[in-house]
Structures are given as C-alpha cells and as structure tokens.
Amino acid sequence: MIKTEYYKDLTKMNTFGMKVKARCFMEYDSVADLVDIEFEELARPVLHIGGGSNLLFTDDFKGTVLHSNINFIEILDTPCHSEPSCHSERSEESSSPVLVSVGSGVVFDDFCDWAAKEGLWGAENLSYIPGEVGASAVQNIGAYGVEVKDIIHKVYCYDTVEEEFVSFSLEECGYGYRDSIFKKPEIKGRYIVTHVVFALSREANPQLGYGHLRDAVMEAANQNITPAAIRKVIIKIRKEKLPEPSVMGSAGSFFMNPVISLEHYQKIEAAAKAEFGPDYKVPHYDLPDGMVKVPAAWMIEQCGWKGKRSGGAAVYDKQPLVIVNYTGDAYPEEIIGLERRIIASVKTKFGVELHPEVDHI
Image 1 (cartoon, rainbow, N blue to C red):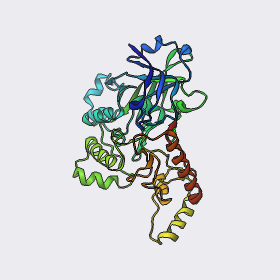
Image 2: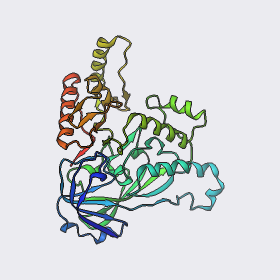
Image 3: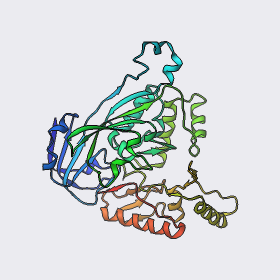
Image 4: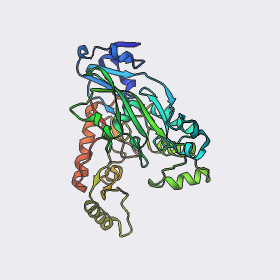
C-alpha cells in the first residue's frame, strides 16, 4: 500500500529536528508498490530518505519525499545448506557465510540487535548507528573499524529510469569511505534500495583493533566475547559520546574523518609535540595503503570548538565531531554557519579541509 500526504511535517523524520515540510510525502509498504508509482509525474525534485539521520534540511522540500516501510529479516539458504552432504560437516557449515536478506525500511540497529541475538558475527561494531538498512547501503556507514560494505553481499534496487528491478554485487556498489555508486551525481536518486543481503558468520570473528575497543570489551565481557557482548560495549560507548536525537537533535558525526598522507600526518604530529611535549601522541589510524586517518574530532577540539555555541547550534560538549540543535529551534543557517567556521579554522591550523558527512538538502 502507498500512503500519500501533502505538506507533510518532517520535523520528526530528521534527527536534526529541522522544522521543515515536504510538498508531497509517499510511503510504500512493499517492493511491488514501487511498480505502481509514476516516477515521471512526481513533483520534483525527488528525495528518498531513511531515518533522516544523515540529513540537514536547509528549507522546506518543494518536491516529493519517498520512504520505505519494507520490513523483514530473513535468513536465506546458502549453497552449502542446499547440499545434503554439507550438513554432516559442521566445521564447513559454520565457516560458510550466513546470508540474511533485510528490507530497506528496517531500522539498522534492529538488524544489529537481531544478528547479535542470533549469535551471528559481522554487524556488532555497527550497533546503535541511527538510520535504516536501505540508507546504510547507500552511505556505507561505519564505526569502530568496520564499514557496512564489510558485510554486504548484494544490494537489490528498483531502477526508476528503466522501471525494472536490478541488483548490485559488492564490487558493483563501488564502496569507498562514506561513499558508493549510489551517491554519484550522474545516478543519484535513480536506484531505490528495496532490500540488502548481508553476509554474516557463525564463526567468531571479533573486530577489536580500533582505539581502546579491545580493552573495553575484554573488561566488560570477562573473556566471554560474543556479538552481543561487543554490541553492549559499543552501545555504551556511543551513548556516552553522542546525544540522543530525542533529547538533542543532531545527525551524529557531522564531518568525515580526513585521510591524509603519512608526510602530512608527520608534520601535524611534529607540531603537536612541539606544543604539548615530546611524549604527546596524535590519535590516528593507519590505513593499508599507507595513508593515515586522523579523527576530525581531535582537530576540531584542538581549534577550540568543543562545547561552543552559535545561536541555536552548538558543538556537542562530549564529542566535537557532532553539531547539535542545542535549543531545539535552531535554524538551518545557524548549523551551516557553524559548520563553515569549523572548516575554516581546521584548514588554517592543520592544512586539512574537512568535508561534511551529512547531506545538505
């Protein structure tokens, strides 16, 4: 069924809490509903949203907003499971990926919770990231050393141009840091994600190499490391660092962590040691290609922005990577103004240009 509303209030459909409306809002319940939508006749522009957790609406939306309400989680038969001989080989069965098909409208953290309870490995580090499954595959969400591309097997979509259902393999999705083929300007908006097949595992495979995650998990789990144990630690960390959107509006991490050359990082490190002493260590994450990822939060804090307010907007006092709707009534212009000043100051101090992770609509 397709539900259509006009001049829909989107305040509760974007975690920033921007008080905006959409000229037309359409929500569909099934894959088949997409065939019935006359996309060429929709008011333009057309925007498909998930949980609105990675959006900054800068004004009322003058076109059509689409939203998926396709909700299901289903374990698929794997090739191994279809062969009777495989059932006698427990080690082979446990090492085979467990393919799970998930509807695009499923809240992503609900999927992480389900996977942890099923004892399936792969999604636990991504726990408590806001948003929905369809948007996760577009954005390539990530946290604590894991990106969603690491567990994606295939993405199924509806092609609004050719009016047919298509699928994309992991390689075809062209994933990069917070990027995918679905975000490319030439095809952005063409493909609507209907469901995603994830490849999880029953074989223990904890990813604990990011920051102090290993120590936190070992202390909390007392050697009994399970997906559920890791998920519990991740949720605790995120709650301590990030505001609840229901209490204080935000889009989570506002900026992407910059990836710089080793030479550039060494210059930043040398300057920091000169300022804070020879034992000071700049937080960073070495990448396989020789590049270095430096936390944008550290750079922003070094520029003195942590906890600073600007009108109704502010830099969150517990995590400077987050810009918040501090008063609940912040205007988009206040958020954008604060964003620009942060970018300028980081560029001046470190020679690094930050880029927003949040989509400006």
